[in-house]
Image (cartoon, rainbow, N blue to C red):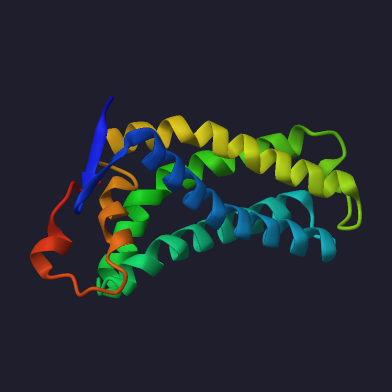
Length: 172
């Protein structure tokens, strides 16, 4: 079984990919739920609601990736670059799948915030998006891309990272 090394221990590549997928899906979900809630609550058009959800999904996805980097003393510009490199592909896939499921679920885009169909469709679409992204995230990690680029920083818990450590790894 392929293993990925970081710091002082090894983890199963599937476990690393699962953690990375859940982490990425968490940011996407925060943004997507906020976008759908604002869009539905403010009676935005479906296309505006989808656009808002996508924008917020990327914003929150990148922010959640940047937090451990900034805590590990990675400069903000480098943290942003690493977040963009590690998450853009997986967030893109999640957003394509999530929004496709929402659009093709009868009545989901027209359901209101108080409607169970709205929430069931949204959570179902996010679950499907996470399942769709896992193989991609796993493959990217196996190639030293995606979350493999930032994974080593998630275990520093505020330790200062010297420039040599912060610069090693595989570029996107």
